[in-house]
Image 1 (cartoon, helix red, strand yellow):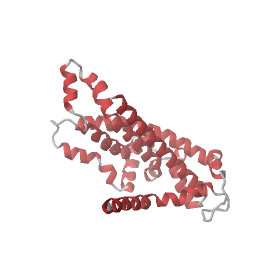
Image 2 (spheres, one colour):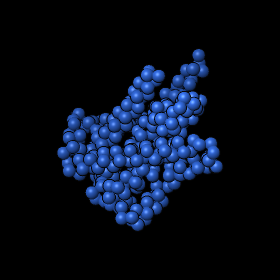
Image 3 (spheres, rainbow, N blue to C red):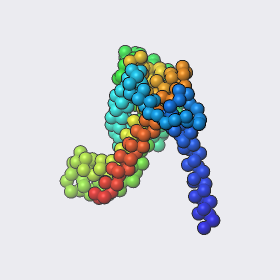
Image 4 (tube, one colour):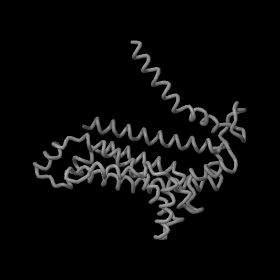
Length: 260
């Protein structure tokens, strides 16, 4: 019994350590003050109103939605296709190739940003939505690959072999067997890709122009100029969006499990 209590206490302290910064900043999104300070003088929604009425913040939110949606679609397609390819046991150095897909997660963001700027400049894609989406996709694909590979590894290959033995074509096996079974991993990867795009600042600084200023970049610029509670309101939107998409994934997994 004491061991269970110790484990529970350790888990609780770990969770508190992880969420303490969020607990500290999120209430300030509802302050009526013009500075980030405690105690909160009174509660207000003025900073959320500023996010949706000020041109700079409104344009940043719109850009983040466009770039995040494009990144999610592209990263999910590429990451899922790569995961299916890496599943093939006939590929030599399959483990090494999996590691290569994870390199954007460990390469310093500044180095990656400089490289992306040079590469995209050669194709004339700097200061464009397409260039920012491609740059964000590079760092988002590894999250999709990790999620989808985990889902594919949990699929019993005998189920797919049984479908093939019944005359199903490879395309039919993929659409009717493999994809439905791996769908929770695909959805999780898509959510991670969207969250990665929303949070990316360094690559955006290197490849985006004034018209592609995202919410994360706007927050970074605002911190340099003036620490406004609007930043806390924007952070609240970040977290709310992440929780929403996470709940969508959990609900999708529950519905799929119930259907099975």
